[in-house]
Amino acid sequence: MTWVFVSVGSGVAGLAILAALAVRVFAAARALGREVERARVLLEPRHARLRAKIDAVRPSGG
Image 1 (spheres, helix red, strand yellow):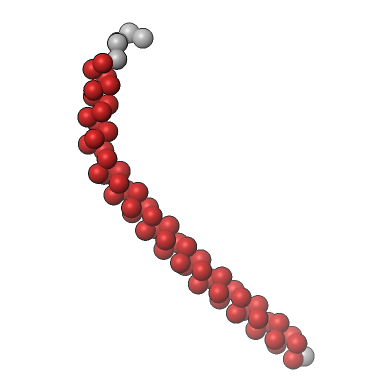
Image 2: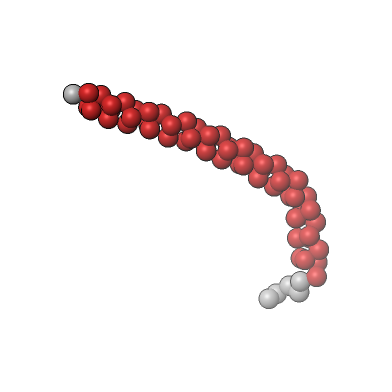
């Protein structure tokens, strides 16, 4: 009977560890998403200028 309690306790402890690690992964993914969005906002004006230059050089009707 003691082995059952030890097994259940070990299982719960393992799930608690996995839950804590999952929270860290989700927090890191959210931070990465914010960083990517920030980079996109910073690069968007440059991208628009480059796109305008490319369109000015590209022959139309192609």
